[in-house]
Amino acid sequence: DAGVTQSPTHLIKTRGQQVTLRCSPISGHKSVSWYQQVLGQGPQFIFQYYEKEERGRGNFPDRFSARQFPNYSSELNVNALLLGDSALYLCASSLGTANEQFFGPGTRLTVL
Amino acid sequence: GENVEQHPSTLSVQEGDSAVIKCTYSDSASNYFPWYKQELGKRPQLIIDIRSNVGEKKDQRIAVTLNKTAKHFSLHITETQPEDSAVYFCADGRGSTLGRLYFGRGTQLTVWP
Image (cartoon, each protein chain N blue to C red):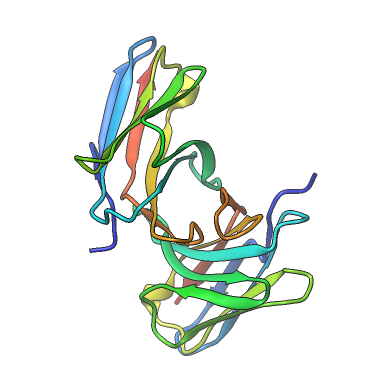
Protein backbone atom coordinates (compact mmCIF):
# COMPACT_ATOMS: atom_id res chain seq x y z
CA ASP A 1 0.00 0.00 0.00
CA ALA A 2 1.44 3.34 -1.02
CA GLY A 3 1.40 6.07 1.56
CA VAL A 4 0.73 9.73 0.95
CA THR A 5 2.90 11.06 -1.85
CA GLN A 6 3.88 14.65 -2.60
CA SER A 7 5.66 16.36 -5.46
CA PRO A 8 8.04 17.93 -5.98
CA THR A 9 10.40 17.01 -3.15
CA HIS A 10 12.27 20.30 -3.27
CA LEU A 11 11.57 23.60 -4.96
CA ILE A 12 13.44 26.88 -5.19
CA LYS A 13 11.57 30.02 -6.22
CA THR A 14 12.19 33.75 -6.10
CA ARG A 15 10.05 36.38 -4.42
CA GLY A 16 6.89 37.25 -6.33
CA GLN A 17 6.69 33.92 -8.15
CA GLN A 18 3.90 31.40 -7.90
CA VAL A 19 4.15 27.76 -6.88
CA THR A 20 1.93 24.67 -7.12
CA LEU A 21 2.45 21.71 -4.81
CA ARG A 22 0.79 18.34 -5.33
CA CYS A 23 -0.45 15.60 -3.05
CA SER A 24 -1.87 12.13 -3.61
CA PRO A 25 -3.65 10.64 -0.60
CA ILE A 26 -3.62 7.05 0.55
CA SER A 27 -5.95 4.99 -1.62
CA GLY A 28 -9.47 5.20 -0.23
CA HIS A 29 -8.85 8.36 1.77
CA LYS A 30 -11.19 11.19 0.89
CA SER A 31 -9.84 13.97 3.08
CA VAL A 32 -6.66 15.95 2.46
CA SER A 33 -5.22 18.59 4.76
CA TRP A 34 -2.30 20.92 4.13
CA TYR A 35 0.16 22.17 6.73
CA GLN A 36 3.12 24.54 6.71
CA GLN A 37 6.08 23.62 8.90
CA VAL A 38 8.66 26.31 9.47
CA LEU A 39 12.02 25.10 10.76
CA GLY A 40 11.94 24.45 14.49
CA GLN A 41 8.16 24.65 14.82
CA GLY A 42 5.16 22.38 14.65
CA PRO A 43 3.05 22.12 11.50
CA GLN A 44 0.50 24.93 11.04
CA PHE A 45 -2.90 24.09 9.55
CA ILE A 46 -3.58 25.73 6.16
CA PHE A 47 -6.53 23.93 4.53
CA GLN A 48 -8.70 20.87 4.76
CA TYR A 49 -10.58 19.39 1.81
CA TYR A 50 -13.13 16.61 1.94
CA GLU A 51 -15.05 15.26 -1.03
CA LYS A 52 -13.63 18.10 -3.15
CA GLU A 53 -14.99 20.82 -0.89
CA GLU A 54 -13.05 23.12 1.40
CA ARG A 55 -13.93 22.22 4.97
CA GLY A 56 -11.57 24.46 6.84
CA ARG A 57 -8.99 27.19 6.44
CA GLY A 58 -6.29 28.26 8.84
CA ASN A 59 -4.92 31.73 9.45
CA PHE A 60 -3.17 32.17 6.10
CA PRO A 61 -3.53 35.01 3.57
CA ASP A 62 -5.53 34.76 0.36
CA ARG A 63 -2.27 34.17 -1.54
CA PHE A 64 -2.74 30.56 -0.43
CA SER A 65 -5.36 28.50 -2.24
CA ALA A 66 -6.03 24.83 -2.80
CA ARG A 67 -8.32 22.42 -4.52
CA GLN A 68 -9.16 18.74 -4.51
CA PHE A 69 -9.78 16.70 -7.63
CA PRO A 70 -12.31 13.90 -8.28
CA ASN A 71 -9.61 11.32 -7.56
CA TYR A 72 -9.06 13.02 -4.16
CA SER A 73 -5.59 14.28 -5.02
CA SER A 74 -4.98 17.89 -4.13
CA GLU A 75 -2.96 20.94 -5.12
CA LEU A 76 -1.80 23.82 -2.97
CA ASN A 77 -1.07 27.09 -4.76
CA VAL A 78 0.82 30.01 -3.32
CA ASN A 79 0.97 33.30 -5.23
CA ALA A 80 3.29 36.29 -4.84
CA LEU A 81 5.81 34.32 -2.83
CA LEU A 82 7.50 35.95 0.14
CA LEU A 83 10.74 34.97 1.85
CA GLY A 84 8.66 33.93 4.85
CA ASP A 85 6.88 31.29 2.77
CA SER A 86 10.04 29.18 2.88
CA ALA A 87 9.03 26.04 4.75
CA LEU A 88 8.22 22.36 4.53
CA TYR A 89 4.70 21.94 3.15
CA LEU A 90 3.05 18.79 4.39
CA CYS A 91 -0.02 17.06 3.09
CA ALA A 92 -1.98 14.66 5.30
CA SER A 93 -4.75 12.32 4.28
CA SER A 94 -7.49 10.61 6.27
CA LEU A 95 -10.49 8.43 5.53
CA GLY A 96 -12.91 11.13 6.53
CA THR A 97 -12.86 14.31 8.51
CA ALA A 98 -12.92 12.49 11.84
CA ASN A 99 -10.13 9.99 11.32
CA GLU A 100 -6.41 9.74 11.94
CA GLN A 101 -4.23 11.79 9.61
CA PHE A 102 -1.20 10.36 7.85
CA PHE A 103 1.44 12.69 6.49
CA GLY A 104 3.32 12.71 3.23
CA PRO A 105 7.07 13.38 3.02
CA GLY A 106 6.53 17.06 2.33
CA THR A 107 7.77 19.56 -0.23
CA ARG A 108 10.66 21.73 0.88
CA LEU A 109 10.06 25.23 -0.58
CA THR A 110 12.85 27.77 -0.54
CA VAL A 111 12.06 31.35 -1.56
CA LEU A 112 15.08 33.49 -2.45
CA GLY B 1 -4.29 31.24 20.69
CA GLU B 2 -4.84 28.20 18.54
CA ASN B 3 -1.60 26.44 19.36
CA VAL B 4 -1.10 23.83 22.02
CA GLU B 5 1.44 24.47 24.77
CA GLN B 6 4.08 21.75 24.85
CA HIS B 7 6.84 21.18 27.41
CA PRO B 8 9.72 20.65 27.62
CA SER B 9 11.24 21.89 24.37
CA THR B 10 14.24 19.59 24.83
CA LEU B 11 14.62 16.42 26.87
CA SER B 12 17.71 14.27 27.36
CA VAL B 13 17.51 10.88 29.03
CA GLN B 14 19.75 7.87 29.49
CA GLU B 15 18.85 4.73 27.59
CA GLY B 16 16.40 2.67 29.65
CA ASP B 17 14.98 5.67 31.51
CA SER B 18 11.46 7.02 31.02
CA ALA B 19 10.55 10.21 29.17
CA VAL B 20 7.44 12.32 29.72
CA ILE B 21 6.21 15.14 27.50
CA LYS B 22 3.24 17.30 28.51
CA CYS B 23 0.79 19.37 26.51
CA THR B 24 -1.96 21.77 27.48
CA TYR B 25 -4.92 22.77 25.34
CA SER B 26 -7.47 25.53 25.79
CA ASP B 27 -10.65 24.55 23.95
CA SER B 28 -13.01 22.40 25.99
CA ALA B 29 -14.54 21.20 22.70
CA SER B 30 -11.28 19.46 21.76
CA ASN B 31 -11.83 15.72 21.56
CA TYR B 32 -8.89 14.11 19.80
CA PHE B 33 -5.22 14.22 20.77
CA PRO B 34 -2.60 12.55 18.56
CA TRP B 35 1.15 12.37 19.06
CA TYR B 36 3.56 12.44 16.15
CA LYS B 37 7.25 11.51 15.96
CA GLN B 38 9.38 13.32 13.41
CA GLU B 39 12.93 12.23 12.68
CA LEU B 40 15.29 14.66 11.01
CA GLY B 41 14.31 15.27 7.40
CA LYS B 42 11.34 12.91 7.56
CA ARG B 43 7.58 13.16 7.73
CA PRO B 44 5.68 13.26 11.03
CA GLN B 45 4.52 9.76 11.94
CA LEU B 46 1.50 9.05 14.11
CA ILE B 47 2.64 7.01 17.11
CA ILE B 48 -0.40 7.06 19.38
CA ASP B 49 -3.61 8.99 19.83
CA ILE B 50 -6.39 9.31 22.38
CA ARG B 51 -9.97 10.45 22.20
CA SER B 52 -11.75 12.42 24.87
CA ASN B 53 -13.85 9.51 26.14
CA VAL B 54 -10.73 7.66 27.33
CA GLY B 55 -8.32 8.59 30.12
CA GLU B 56 -5.33 6.46 29.12
CA LYS B 57 -4.11 4.43 26.18
CA LYS B 58 -1.05 2.19 25.92
CA ASP B 59 0.85 0.67 23.05
CA GLN B 60 3.90 -1.31 24.14
CA ARG B 61 6.43 1.22 25.53
CA ILE B 62 4.28 4.22 24.71
CA ALA B 63 1.30 5.53 26.66
CA VAL B 64 -0.80 8.68 26.57
CA THR B 65 -2.87 10.04 29.43
CA LEU B 66 -5.61 12.65 29.22
CA ASN B 67 -6.97 14.89 31.96
CA LYS B 68 -9.98 16.68 30.52
CA THR B 69 -10.66 18.67 33.65
CA ALA B 70 -7.20 20.19 33.63
CA LYS B 71 -7.07 20.24 29.82
CA HIS B 72 -3.75 18.51 29.54
CA PHE B 73 -2.41 15.29 28.08
CA SER B 74 0.96 13.58 28.30
CA LEU B 75 3.12 11.15 26.36
CA HIS B 76 5.03 8.57 28.36
CA ILE B 77 7.84 6.52 26.83
CA THR B 78 9.30 3.77 29.00
CA GLU B 79 12.57 1.87 28.56
CA THR B 80 13.80 4.47 26.09
CA GLN B 81 16.16 3.45 23.29
CA PRO B 82 18.51 5.55 21.14
CA GLU B 83 16.14 5.09 18.19
CA ASP B 84 13.47 6.96 20.17
CA SER B 85 15.53 10.12 19.60
CA ALA B 86 13.42 12.49 17.48
CA VAL B 87 11.15 15.51 17.75
CA TYR B 88 7.77 14.67 19.25
CA PHE B 89 4.70 16.81 18.55
CA CYS B 90 1.40 16.77 20.36
CA ALA B 91 -1.68 18.00 18.55
CA ASP B 92 -5.22 19.03 19.32
CA GLY B 93 -7.99 17.93 16.98
CA ARG B 94 -10.51 20.61 17.70
CA GLY B 95 -14.27 20.63 17.69
CA SER B 96 -16.50 18.59 15.42
CA THR B 97 -13.89 17.75 12.84
CA LEU B 98 -10.50 16.14 13.17
CA GLY B 99 -9.39 17.55 9.87
CA ARG B 100 -7.72 20.43 11.61
CA LEU B 101 -4.86 19.58 13.90
CA TYR B 102 -3.23 22.30 15.99
CA PHE B 103 0.29 21.31 16.92
CA GLY B 104 2.59 22.09 19.81
CA ARG B 105 6.05 23.46 19.13
CA GLY B 106 7.68 20.07 19.59
CA THR B 107 10.04 18.36 22.03
CA GLN B 108 13.50 17.29 20.93
CA LEU B 109 14.10 13.99 22.72
CA THR B 110 17.64 12.68 22.88
CA VAL B 111 18.30 9.23 24.31
CA TRP B 112 21.94 8.65 25.22
CA PRO B 113 23.29 5.10 25.02
